[in-house]
Length: 429
Image (cartoon, rainbow, N blue to C red; front, side, top):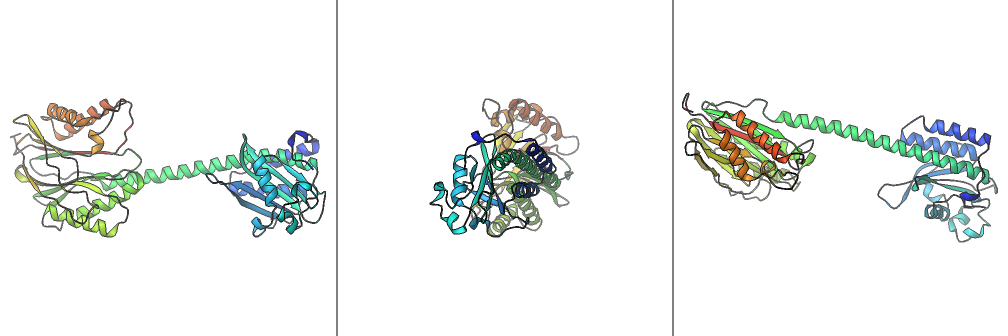
């Protein structure tokens, strides 16, 4: 009887050949289930055990789970948890050393092992599967009828084999992780493409106005979005919004909110009604606990804008003729928060050359490597410097300014920006 690897004999030539063959077999696949089954089948083969069990530690859990349970004829065994010596399993798990007993019925180390006595176990061999001193699991074989079936050479061979098995298991797990990561990355890229496809491919036009927009996600998918659509031949609906969460949940919520706002905008009698109807539907149909801030504006001929703010960042209005600016009123609650939505429309009259900047907080709260936010003042200055340019160029100047400010700092939030410039009648800008 032994439980120490220090006294194990070195594998002989025949055992080395067997170990080489086993290792070659293990390295023939990266499928984890197949690896585990190969391990157990070869263990039964080289030891002649009546039964064999392979258990693995569950990542993040303080327990081992049975993965393979085999009989001598390689048949799967039922209810393996009730067929092994838990005393020996726990001992090997605790010490991380192999254990051999040639007759457990009379081994003084296990006289208190109830499962050994009840199951009538005699020859037992249990070896830990280690990778860099980290316990991955263990291999357990036994025989209920024959004492002395296993010897120290079996223990030496199985201990060496367990080292190879640990590497094979680790490789298979890493491969699974890589495959899953690749699948998730592919799915997220598809989700990103789908989400970008929900945004307007081309922006509608209305005489006297220039509109430019940009959208950047901090992750593969985003909770920010913008929309611009025709309400009728004389009016445009313009939306910018920011979902409270990030990642895939926010992206799904974004798609729902965008569709509801657009659908309600085409049938509602006012912008307030559009957002109230959308709020009611979100509260009724979703249980996510997320909400979305929205600024919804109706753009009309002659520089007339009607805007409704539902908890969103205040748009910047730059008055070109006076070289002054103001931030439009903040108002209301985000959609999906409360049943009551106290929003109020605000009328805005633009003069030729005036610029409206709609944005999400990912823009003004963008930080540099020192943790300083970009802020409102920088946004005002870059708009003032570029206000005489077309809307698309103003947008480029803002994005370049934010990018230069951030430097090497990574974005922590999605960023969406819409620039609306009123040119007035032809030739009056």
